[in-house]
Image (cartoon, rainbow, N blue to C red; front, side):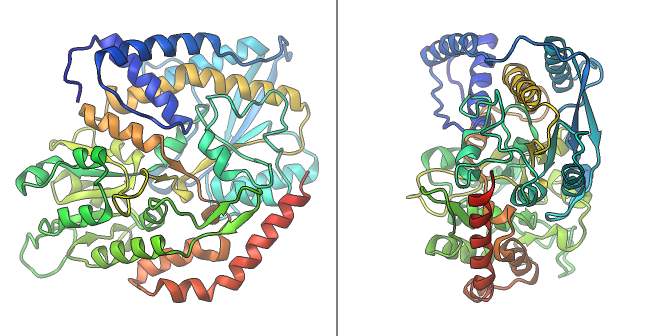
Length: 495
Protein backbone atom coordinates (compact mmCIF):
# COMPACT_ATOMS: atom_id res chain seq x y z
CA UNK A 1 0.00 0.00 0.00
CA UNK A 2 0.96 3.64 -0.30
CA UNK A 3 1.71 4.71 3.28
CA UNK A 4 2.41 8.35 2.43
CA UNK A 5 0.10 10.89 0.91
CA UNK A 6 0.68 11.36 -2.82
CA UNK A 7 -1.31 13.63 -5.10
CA UNK A 8 -3.74 11.91 -7.46
CA UNK A 9 -1.92 13.15 -10.55
CA UNK A 10 1.43 11.76 -9.44
CA UNK A 11 -0.13 8.44 -8.44
CA UNK A 12 -1.89 8.09 -11.78
CA UNK A 13 1.29 8.92 -13.65
CA UNK A 14 3.30 6.42 -11.60
CA UNK A 15 0.87 3.57 -12.25
CA UNK A 16 0.66 4.46 -15.93
CA UNK A 17 4.45 4.33 -16.20
CA UNK A 18 4.51 0.96 -14.45
CA UNK A 19 1.96 -0.59 -16.78
CA UNK A 20 3.62 0.83 -19.90
CA UNK A 21 6.73 -1.05 -18.77
CA UNK A 22 4.78 -4.14 -17.74
CA UNK A 23 2.78 -4.41 -20.94
CA UNK A 24 5.98 -4.54 -22.96
CA UNK A 25 7.55 -7.28 -20.88
CA UNK A 26 9.97 -5.17 -18.83
CA UNK A 27 10.75 -6.04 -15.22
CA UNK A 28 8.80 -3.87 -12.77
CA UNK A 29 10.33 -2.94 -9.42
CA UNK A 30 7.85 -1.13 -7.17
CA UNK A 31 9.09 1.50 -4.74
CA UNK A 32 6.29 3.35 -2.99
CA UNK A 33 8.24 6.28 -1.62
CA UNK A 34 7.24 9.83 -2.46
CA UNK A 35 10.72 10.65 -3.74
CA UNK A 36 10.59 7.70 -6.11
CA UNK A 37 7.15 8.75 -7.36
CA UNK A 38 8.47 12.22 -8.17
CA UNK A 39 11.59 10.94 -9.93
CA UNK A 40 9.63 8.30 -11.84
CA UNK A 41 7.21 10.94 -13.06
CA UNK A 42 10.05 13.16 -14.21
CA UNK A 43 11.90 10.35 -15.97
CA UNK A 44 8.72 9.08 -17.63
CA UNK A 45 7.83 12.54 -18.91
CA UNK A 46 11.29 13.02 -20.39
CA UNK A 47 11.37 9.57 -22.03
CA UNK A 48 7.85 9.88 -23.43
CA UNK A 49 8.55 13.23 -25.08
CA UNK A 50 11.82 12.00 -26.54
CA UNK A 51 10.42 8.75 -27.93
CA UNK A 52 8.87 9.06 -31.35
CA UNK A 53 8.17 6.66 -34.16
CA UNK A 54 10.57 7.49 -36.99
CA UNK A 55 7.99 7.37 -39.75
CA UNK A 56 7.67 8.97 -43.19
CA UNK A 57 5.78 12.19 -43.78
CA UNK A 58 3.47 10.79 -46.44
CA UNK A 59 -0.22 10.55 -47.33
CA UNK A 60 -1.85 7.38 -48.63
CA UNK A 61 -4.76 8.94 -50.52
CA UNK A 62 -7.64 7.58 -48.46
CA UNK A 63 -6.42 3.96 -48.34
CA UNK A 64 -8.68 1.69 -46.29
CA UNK A 65 -6.32 -0.14 -43.94
CA UNK A 66 -8.14 -3.44 -43.38
CA UNK A 67 -7.39 -5.62 -40.34
CA UNK A 68 -8.76 -9.17 -40.06
CA UNK A 69 -9.94 -9.93 -36.51
CA UNK A 70 -10.46 -13.54 -35.44
CA UNK A 71 -10.11 -15.62 -32.32
CA UNK A 72 -11.82 -17.83 -29.79
CA UNK A 73 -15.40 -16.92 -28.82
CA UNK A 74 -15.74 -18.99 -25.64
CA UNK A 75 -17.87 -17.14 -23.08
CA UNK A 76 -18.18 -14.04 -25.31
CA UNK A 77 -14.38 -13.79 -25.63
CA UNK A 78 -14.26 -11.43 -28.60
CA UNK A 79 -11.39 -8.97 -28.66
CA UNK A 80 -11.18 -6.23 -31.28
CA UNK A 81 -8.35 -3.86 -30.37
CA UNK A 82 -9.06 -1.53 -33.29
CA UNK A 83 -12.84 -1.04 -33.29
CA UNK A 84 -13.92 2.35 -31.93
CA UNK A 85 -16.50 4.00 -34.17
CA UNK A 86 -17.28 7.01 -32.00
CA UNK A 87 -16.59 8.61 -28.64
CA UNK A 88 -18.80 6.97 -26.02
CA UNK A 89 -17.36 8.14 -22.71
CA UNK A 90 -15.92 4.67 -22.02
CA UNK A 91 -12.26 5.26 -21.36
CA UNK A 92 -10.76 2.39 -23.37
CA UNK A 93 -13.04 2.88 -26.37
CA UNK A 94 -12.28 6.58 -26.46
CA UNK A 95 -8.53 5.99 -26.22
CA UNK A 96 -8.74 3.67 -29.21
CA UNK A 97 -10.86 6.18 -31.10
CA UNK A 98 -8.31 8.95 -30.49
CA UNK A 99 -5.43 6.65 -31.45
CA UNK A 100 -7.14 5.60 -34.68
CA UNK A 101 -8.02 9.18 -35.53
CA UNK A 102 -4.45 10.36 -34.98
CA UNK A 103 -3.07 7.71 -37.34
CA UNK A 104 -5.84 8.19 -39.91
CA UNK A 105 -5.23 11.92 -40.08
CA UNK A 106 -1.46 11.54 -40.17
CA UNK A 107 -1.50 9.24 -43.20
CA UNK A 108 -4.87 10.03 -44.83
CA UNK A 109 -6.24 6.52 -44.33
CA UNK A 110 -9.30 4.84 -42.83
CA UNK A 111 -8.84 1.97 -40.38
CA UNK A 112 -11.37 -0.84 -40.87
CA UNK A 113 -11.79 -4.25 -39.26
CA UNK A 114 -13.33 -7.45 -40.54
CA UNK A 115 -14.48 -9.61 -37.61
CA UNK A 116 -14.57 -13.34 -38.37
CA UNK A 117 -14.51 -15.03 -34.97
CA UNK A 118 -14.00 -18.74 -34.53
CA UNK A 119 -10.81 -20.63 -33.82
CA UNK A 120 -9.53 -24.16 -33.74
CA UNK A 121 -6.01 -25.32 -33.04
CA UNK A 122 -4.19 -24.15 -36.12
CA UNK A 123 -6.98 -24.41 -38.68
CA UNK A 124 -9.42 -21.72 -37.62
CA UNK A 125 -11.01 -18.93 -39.60
CA UNK A 126 -7.91 -16.74 -39.29
CA UNK A 127 -5.64 -19.39 -40.74
CA UNK A 128 -8.01 -20.22 -43.58
CA UNK A 129 -8.64 -16.63 -44.64
CA UNK A 130 -4.99 -15.52 -44.55
CA UNK A 131 -3.83 -18.70 -46.31
CA UNK A 132 -6.40 -18.27 -49.07
CA UNK A 133 -5.51 -14.61 -49.59
CA UNK A 134 -1.78 -15.26 -49.81
CA UNK A 135 -2.18 -18.19 -52.19
CA UNK A 136 -4.44 -16.09 -54.44
CA UNK A 137 -2.23 -13.00 -54.29
CA UNK A 138 -5.15 -11.17 -52.67
CA UNK A 139 -4.16 -8.09 -50.67
CA UNK A 140 -7.57 -7.54 -49.05
CA UNK A 141 -6.03 -7.60 -45.57
CA UNK A 142 -3.15 -5.30 -44.66
CA UNK A 143 -2.81 -6.99 -41.26
CA UNK A 144 -4.56 -9.33 -38.87
CA UNK A 145 -5.10 -9.92 -35.19
CA UNK A 146 -5.33 -13.70 -35.19
CA UNK A 147 -5.60 -16.57 -32.69
CA UNK A 148 -2.21 -17.80 -31.46
CA UNK A 149 -2.51 -21.35 -32.77
CA UNK A 150 -3.42 -20.01 -36.23
CA UNK A 151 -0.50 -17.57 -36.15
CA UNK A 152 1.93 -20.42 -35.52
CA UNK A 153 0.53 -22.54 -38.34
CA UNK A 154 0.56 -19.60 -40.76
CA UNK A 155 4.18 -18.76 -39.87
CA UNK A 156 5.28 -22.34 -40.43
CA UNK A 157 3.59 -22.39 -43.84
CA UNK A 158 5.37 -19.25 -45.03
CA UNK A 159 2.21 -17.14 -45.24
CA UNK A 160 3.43 -14.27 -43.06
CA UNK A 161 5.80 -11.33 -43.34
CA UNK A 162 8.77 -11.42 -40.98
CA UNK A 163 8.02 -8.55 -38.57
CA UNK A 164 11.75 -7.95 -38.17
CA UNK A 165 12.06 -7.08 -41.85
CA UNK A 166 8.84 -5.10 -42.26
CA UNK A 167 9.74 -1.48 -43.12
CA UNK A 168 9.48 1.03 -40.25
CA UNK A 169 8.70 -1.60 -37.61
CA UNK A 170 11.22 -1.31 -34.76
CA UNK A 171 10.58 -4.19 -32.38
CA UNK A 172 13.18 -2.86 -29.94
CA UNK A 173 10.95 0.11 -29.14
CA UNK A 174 9.14 0.02 -25.79
CA UNK A 175 5.71 -0.22 -27.41
CA UNK A 176 6.51 -3.78 -28.55
CA UNK A 177 6.61 -6.68 -26.07
CA UNK A 178 10.25 -7.49 -25.44
CA UNK A 179 9.49 -10.80 -23.73
CA UNK A 180 7.60 -11.90 -26.82
CA UNK A 181 10.57 -10.90 -28.98
CA UNK A 182 12.73 -13.22 -26.90
CA UNK A 183 10.30 -16.13 -26.56
CA UNK A 184 8.91 -16.36 -30.10
CA UNK A 185 11.86 -15.54 -32.36
CA UNK A 186 13.09 -18.69 -34.13
CA UNK A 187 16.27 -18.55 -36.24
CA UNK A 188 16.16 -14.75 -36.08
CA UNK A 189 12.63 -14.59 -37.50
CA UNK A 190 9.47 -13.31 -35.85
CA UNK A 191 6.20 -13.60 -37.74
CA UNK A 192 3.68 -12.29 -35.19
CA UNK A 193 3.91 -9.92 -32.28
CA UNK A 194 2.05 -7.79 -29.74
CA UNK A 195 2.63 -4.98 -27.28
CA UNK A 196 0.83 -1.75 -26.52
CA UNK A 197 -1.04 -2.06 -29.83
CA UNK A 198 -3.25 -4.68 -28.14
CA UNK A 199 -4.78 -5.21 -24.71
CA UNK A 200 -5.94 -8.74 -25.55
CA UNK A 201 -2.61 -10.25 -24.45
CA UNK A 202 -3.04 -8.72 -21.00
CA UNK A 203 -6.60 -10.04 -20.73
CA UNK A 204 -5.34 -13.52 -21.68
CA UNK A 205 -2.64 -13.64 -18.98
CA UNK A 206 -2.93 -16.31 -16.29
CA UNK A 207 -3.92 -14.97 -12.87
CA UNK A 208 -5.70 -15.89 -9.64
CA UNK A 209 -8.50 -14.11 -7.80
CA UNK A 210 -8.82 -14.66 -4.05
CA UNK A 211 -11.72 -14.03 -1.70
CA UNK A 212 -10.75 -11.63 1.09
CA UNK A 213 -13.67 -12.61 3.34
CA UNK A 214 -12.57 -16.24 3.38
CA UNK A 215 -8.98 -15.22 4.11
CA UNK A 216 -10.29 -13.33 7.14
CA UNK A 217 -12.83 -15.97 8.22
CA UNK A 218 -10.20 -18.72 8.26
CA UNK A 219 -7.40 -16.52 9.69
CA UNK A 220 -5.20 -17.20 6.67
CA UNK A 221 -1.92 -15.43 5.90
CA UNK A 222 -1.94 -12.33 3.71
CA UNK A 223 -1.25 -13.57 0.15
CA UNK A 224 -0.12 -10.12 -1.00
CA UNK A 225 2.69 -10.20 1.53
CA UNK A 226 3.60 -13.71 0.43
CA UNK A 227 3.92 -12.59 -3.20
CA UNK A 228 6.14 -9.66 -2.27
CA UNK A 229 8.41 -11.65 0.06
CA UNK A 230 8.75 -14.50 -2.45
CA UNK A 231 6.89 -17.15 -0.45
CA UNK A 232 3.83 -17.41 -2.72
CA UNK A 233 4.44 -21.00 -3.84
CA UNK A 234 2.20 -23.85 -4.91
CA UNK A 235 2.69 -25.46 -1.49
CA UNK A 236 1.61 -22.25 0.23
CA UNK A 237 -1.45 -21.98 -1.96
CA UNK A 238 -2.48 -25.57 -1.30
CA UNK A 239 -1.94 -25.14 2.41
CA UNK A 240 -4.09 -22.01 2.56
CA UNK A 241 -7.08 -23.75 1.01
CA UNK A 242 -7.01 -27.16 2.70
CA UNK A 243 -9.53 -26.27 5.46
CA UNK A 244 -11.80 -24.01 3.41
CA UNK A 245 -13.76 -26.66 1.53
CA UNK A 246 -17.15 -27.63 2.93
CA UNK A 247 -20.16 -29.72 1.88
CA UNK A 248 -22.44 -26.78 2.56
CA UNK A 249 -25.74 -28.53 1.87
CA UNK A 250 -24.69 -31.69 3.67
CA UNK A 251 -25.80 -34.09 0.95
CA UNK A 252 -22.36 -35.70 0.44
CA UNK A 253 -22.45 -34.68 -3.25
CA UNK A 254 -19.80 -32.16 -4.23
CA UNK A 255 -21.25 -29.74 -6.77
CA UNK A 256 -21.90 -26.03 -7.39
CA UNK A 257 -23.73 -25.74 -4.06
CA UNK A 258 -20.60 -26.36 -1.96
CA UNK A 259 -17.46 -24.42 -1.01
CA UNK A 260 -13.99 -25.15 -2.38
CA UNK A 261 -10.36 -24.23 -1.97
CA UNK A 262 -10.25 -23.35 -5.67
CA UNK A 263 -12.34 -23.04 -8.79
CA UNK A 264 -10.04 -24.05 -11.64
CA UNK A 265 -10.17 -23.49 -15.39
CA UNK A 266 -8.81 -26.50 -17.29
CA UNK A 267 -5.99 -24.65 -19.08
CA UNK A 268 -4.59 -23.58 -15.72
CA UNK A 269 -2.64 -26.85 -15.66
CA UNK A 270 -0.62 -25.55 -18.63
CA UNK A 271 -0.19 -22.22 -16.86
CA UNK A 272 1.23 -23.72 -13.69
CA UNK A 273 3.78 -25.66 -15.74
CA UNK A 274 4.96 -22.33 -17.16
CA UNK A 275 4.78 -20.69 -13.73
CA UNK A 276 7.85 -22.76 -12.79
CA UNK A 277 9.86 -20.81 -15.37
CA UNK A 278 9.88 -23.85 -17.67
CA UNK A 279 8.30 -24.25 -21.11
CA UNK A 280 7.16 -27.06 -23.34
CA UNK A 281 9.65 -25.78 -25.93
CA UNK A 282 12.28 -23.05 -25.70
CA UNK A 283 14.31 -21.14 -28.28
CA UNK A 284 18.02 -21.72 -27.62
CA UNK A 285 20.84 -19.14 -28.03
CA UNK A 286 21.56 -20.52 -31.51
CA UNK A 287 18.00 -19.66 -32.56
CA UNK A 288 16.75 -23.25 -32.78
CA UNK A 289 13.72 -24.53 -30.93
CA UNK A 290 14.31 -27.28 -28.36
CA UNK A 291 11.93 -29.54 -26.45
CA UNK A 292 12.16 -28.61 -22.74
CA UNK A 293 8.97 -29.98 -21.19
CA UNK A 294 10.43 -32.87 -19.22
CA UNK A 295 12.49 -31.95 -16.16
CA UNK A 296 12.34 -32.16 -12.38
CA UNK A 297 10.71 -28.77 -11.96
CA UNK A 298 7.82 -29.58 -14.29
CA UNK A 299 7.36 -33.02 -12.73
CA UNK A 300 7.35 -31.55 -9.23
CA UNK A 301 4.82 -28.82 -10.06
CA UNK A 302 2.52 -31.23 -11.90
CA UNK A 303 2.60 -33.70 -9.02
CA UNK A 304 1.98 -31.08 -6.33
CA UNK A 305 -0.78 -29.30 -8.22
CA UNK A 306 -2.68 -32.36 -9.38
CA UNK A 307 -2.34 -34.29 -6.10
CA UNK A 308 -4.07 -31.41 -4.34
CA UNK A 309 -6.61 -30.39 -6.94
CA UNK A 310 -7.67 -33.70 -8.45
CA UNK A 311 -9.48 -33.97 -5.12
CA UNK A 312 -13.03 -32.88 -5.98
CA UNK A 313 -13.63 -31.83 -2.37
CA UNK A 314 -10.82 -29.28 -2.81
CA UNK A 315 -11.28 -28.05 -6.38
CA UNK A 316 -14.28 -27.39 -8.61
CA UNK A 317 -13.32 -28.17 -12.22
CA UNK A 318 -16.14 -26.15 -13.72
CA UNK A 319 -15.48 -27.04 -17.36
CA UNK A 320 -15.89 -30.72 -16.52
CA UNK A 321 -19.50 -29.74 -15.74
CA UNK A 322 -20.12 -27.01 -18.34
CA UNK A 323 -18.12 -24.55 -20.40
CA UNK A 324 -20.61 -21.88 -19.37
CA UNK A 325 -18.86 -19.68 -16.83
CA UNK A 326 -22.07 -18.50 -15.17
CA UNK A 327 -22.08 -21.00 -12.27
CA UNK A 328 -18.43 -20.60 -11.22
CA UNK A 329 -18.75 -16.82 -11.36
CA UNK A 330 -21.80 -17.01 -9.11
CA UNK A 331 -20.00 -19.40 -6.77
CA UNK A 332 -17.01 -17.11 -6.33
CA UNK A 333 -19.25 -14.08 -5.85
CA UNK A 334 -21.16 -16.02 -3.18
CA UNK A 335 -17.98 -16.81 -1.20
CA UNK A 336 -17.88 -20.46 -2.29
CA UNK A 337 -14.19 -20.52 -3.23
CA UNK A 338 -11.00 -19.11 -1.77
CA UNK A 339 -9.28 -18.97 -5.18
CA UNK A 340 -10.46 -18.71 -8.77
CA UNK A 341 -7.72 -19.67 -11.25
CA UNK A 342 -8.20 -18.43 -14.78
CA UNK A 343 -7.16 -15.30 -16.73
CA UNK A 344 -6.80 -11.64 -15.81
CA UNK A 345 -9.94 -10.87 -17.84
CA UNK A 346 -11.86 -12.71 -15.11
CA UNK A 347 -11.97 -9.51 -13.04
CA UNK A 348 -14.53 -8.06 -15.47
CA UNK A 349 -17.16 -10.48 -14.12
CA UNK A 350 -16.93 -9.20 -10.55
CA UNK A 351 -17.47 -5.46 -10.74
CA UNK A 352 -20.57 -5.75 -8.52
CA UNK A 353 -19.33 -8.49 -6.20
CA UNK A 354 -20.22 -7.63 -2.59
CA UNK A 355 -17.23 -9.38 -1.00
CA UNK A 356 -13.85 -7.83 -1.70
CA UNK A 357 -11.43 -9.85 -3.80
CA UNK A 358 -7.78 -9.51 -4.70
CA UNK A 359 -5.53 -10.56 -7.58
CA UNK A 360 -2.42 -12.75 -7.48
CA UNK A 361 0.09 -14.17 -9.96
CA UNK A 362 0.29 -17.91 -10.52
CA UNK A 363 2.44 -19.40 -7.73
CA UNK A 364 6.12 -20.27 -7.89
CA UNK A 365 7.24 -23.86 -7.54
CA UNK A 366 9.50 -22.98 -4.60
CA UNK A 367 10.94 -19.99 -2.78
CA UNK A 368 14.28 -20.34 -4.57
CA UNK A 369 12.63 -19.55 -7.93
CA UNK A 370 13.94 -16.26 -9.31
CA UNK A 371 10.56 -14.63 -10.05
CA UNK A 372 6.94 -15.21 -11.00
CA UNK A 373 6.02 -16.36 -14.52
CA UNK A 374 2.61 -15.57 -16.01
CA UNK A 375 1.73 -17.50 -19.13
CA UNK A 376 -0.44 -16.25 -21.98
CA UNK A 377 -3.44 -18.56 -22.32
CA UNK A 378 -2.84 -20.29 -25.65
CA UNK A 379 -6.50 -20.78 -26.57
CA UNK A 380 -7.38 -17.14 -25.87
CA UNK A 381 -4.24 -15.52 -27.28
CA UNK A 382 -4.29 -13.30 -30.36
CA UNK A 383 -1.31 -11.71 -32.10
CA UNK A 384 -0.65 -9.08 -34.72
CA UNK A 385 0.53 -10.41 -38.07
CA UNK A 386 1.06 -9.22 -41.63
CA UNK A 387 0.27 -11.45 -44.64
CA UNK A 388 3.33 -12.09 -46.78
CA UNK A 389 1.56 -10.74 -49.88
CA UNK A 390 1.44 -6.95 -49.53
CA UNK A 391 0.34 -4.23 -51.92
CA UNK A 392 2.63 -1.75 -50.15
CA UNK A 393 4.80 -3.15 -47.33
CA UNK A 394 6.19 0.29 -46.44
CA UNK A 395 2.69 1.64 -45.96
CA UNK A 396 1.72 -1.33 -43.78
CA UNK A 397 4.82 -1.03 -41.61
CA UNK A 398 4.46 2.71 -41.14
CA UNK A 399 0.80 2.47 -40.14
CA UNK A 400 1.34 -0.40 -37.70
CA UNK A 401 4.31 1.33 -36.07
CA UNK A 402 2.24 4.49 -35.71
CA UNK A 403 -0.65 2.54 -34.20
CA UNK A 404 1.73 0.86 -31.74
CA UNK A 405 3.33 4.17 -30.78
CA UNK A 406 0.01 5.96 -30.32
CA UNK A 407 -1.26 3.00 -28.28
CA UNK A 408 1.76 3.34 -26.01
CA UNK A 409 0.77 6.95 -25.33
CA UNK A 410 -3.01 6.56 -25.00
CA UNK A 411 -4.43 3.03 -25.04
CA UNK A 412 -2.17 1.37 -22.45
CA UNK A 413 -2.77 4.13 -19.86
CA UNK A 414 -6.51 3.90 -20.55
CA UNK A 415 -6.44 0.12 -20.16
CA UNK A 416 -4.66 0.49 -16.86
CA UNK A 417 -7.19 3.05 -15.69
CA UNK A 418 -10.06 0.86 -16.87
CA UNK A 419 -8.73 -2.27 -15.23
CA UNK A 420 -7.31 -0.93 -12.01
CA UNK A 421 -8.70 2.48 -11.13
CA UNK A 422 -11.98 2.91 -12.97
CA UNK A 423 -13.96 -0.28 -12.61
CA UNK A 424 -12.63 -3.54 -11.31
CA UNK A 425 -9.64 -3.57 -8.97
CA UNK A 426 -10.31 -2.55 -5.41
CA UNK A 427 -7.01 -1.97 -3.64
CA UNK A 428 -3.49 -0.69 -4.20
CA UNK A 429 -2.03 -4.13 -3.50
CA UNK A 430 -3.87 -5.63 -6.48
CA UNK A 431 -2.47 -2.89 -8.68
CA UNK A 432 0.98 -3.97 -7.59
CA UNK A 433 0.09 -7.62 -8.29
CA UNK A 434 -1.07 -6.73 -11.80
CA UNK A 435 2.23 -4.95 -12.42
CA UNK A 436 4.01 -8.17 -11.45
CA UNK A 437 1.72 -10.32 -13.59
CA UNK A 438 2.02 -8.18 -16.72
CA UNK A 439 5.79 -7.82 -16.39
CA UNK A 440 6.27 -11.59 -16.22
CA UNK A 441 4.67 -12.77 -19.47
CA UNK A 442 5.59 -16.21 -20.82
CA UNK A 443 4.96 -17.23 -24.44
CA UNK A 444 5.37 -20.97 -24.95
CA UNK A 445 5.98 -22.05 -28.55
CA UNK A 446 5.54 -25.66 -27.49
CA UNK A 447 1.87 -24.96 -26.79
CA UNK A 448 1.31 -22.76 -29.87
CA UNK A 449 2.90 -25.29 -32.24
CA UNK A 450 1.21 -28.21 -30.42
CA UNK A 451 4.55 -30.02 -30.28
CA UNK A 452 3.97 -33.71 -29.62
CA UNK A 453 0.35 -32.77 -28.96
CA UNK A 454 1.55 -32.15 -25.41
CA UNK A 455 -0.80 -29.20 -25.01
CA UNK A 456 -3.73 -31.60 -25.52
CA UNK A 457 -2.21 -34.48 -23.60
CA UNK A 458 -1.58 -32.40 -20.49
CA UNK A 459 -5.21 -31.32 -20.60
CA UNK A 460 -6.40 -34.90 -21.13
CA UNK A 461 -4.47 -35.90 -18.01
CA UNK A 462 -6.28 -33.16 -16.12
CA UNK A 463 -9.66 -34.21 -17.51
CA UNK A 464 -9.14 -37.85 -16.53
CA UNK A 465 -7.22 -37.18 -13.28
CA UNK A 466 -4.17 -39.10 -14.45
CA UNK A 467 -0.79 -38.73 -12.73
CA UNK A 468 1.85 -40.60 -14.77
CA UNK A 469 3.42 -37.61 -16.54
CA UNK A 470 6.47 -39.61 -17.57
CA UNK A 471 4.46 -42.23 -19.48
CA UNK A 472 2.48 -39.53 -21.24
CA UNK A 473 5.68 -37.70 -22.19
CA UNK A 474 7.45 -40.83 -23.45
CA UNK A 475 4.50 -41.97 -25.55
CA UNK A 476 4.62 -38.75 -27.59
CA UNK A 477 8.39 -38.14 -27.58
CA UNK A 478 9.05 -39.38 -31.13
CA UNK A 479 6.28 -37.19 -32.50
CA UNK A 480 7.56 -34.23 -30.52
CA UNK A 481 11.13 -34.63 -31.81
CA UNK A 482 9.82 -34.82 -35.37
CA UNK A 483 7.75 -31.66 -34.81
CA UNK A 484 10.78 -29.80 -33.45
CA UNK A 485 12.94 -30.84 -36.40
CA UNK A 486 10.24 -29.88 -38.90
CA UNK A 487 9.83 -26.43 -37.32
CA UNK A 488 13.57 -25.74 -37.19
CA UNK A 489 14.03 -26.83 -40.81
CA UNK A 490 11.11 -24.69 -41.96
CA UNK A 491 12.39 -21.58 -40.21
CA UNK A 492 15.87 -22.13 -41.63
CA UNK A 493 14.39 -22.14 -45.14
CA UNK A 494 11.84 -19.33 -44.74
CA UNK A 495 12.85 -15.98 -46.20
